Length: 107
Length: 123
Image (cartoon, rainbow over all chains, first blue to last red):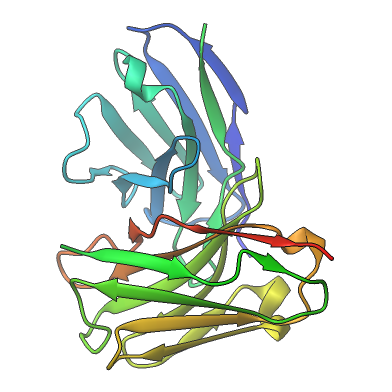
């Protein structure tokens, strides 16, 4: 199975900061990478699919990039609503796997 | 509007079999490209994909739990059922169902999720 490794595990930031989260795959997944945001007690919410395509309704301050084994999620000008946990997930094969998560905390 | 809702027991005893039902609306599992998956999330941990069933009835399971899982669908009721045998305390967590659309305009990943159902395994 493809292993997904996110970094950092925790990130402390302030409103207005630019934040970058990295996700690495144990083998090439081409562009089949999604990013999710999850808040406590809620289901994950799809933000980005196919590595860089923004899901409908997601603010443009979110962006994804990368291909192969290395991917990034960037949040430009962090807003109060963005403090949450973020997960990457690969879907190159039917054996879908998630990263371990990055918690974005208020500094 | 696509909606999914999980239902099932909140408490299961060790060694018992868990049966969860995902009831959905806003799409048909008879439509080419539509899939429904089950995903679970232990408290404080990352989500873990469990199983998927395609519009054509094809089934896929996570490697580590393959022998314990069965996914099935009832298209007339718009439901997908997951059974997991020999439950243990490590299986405690929130269980979600989610839709995947593999159509030309779909995202091909978990775009729509249910609200989740918490399952606790304890004697």
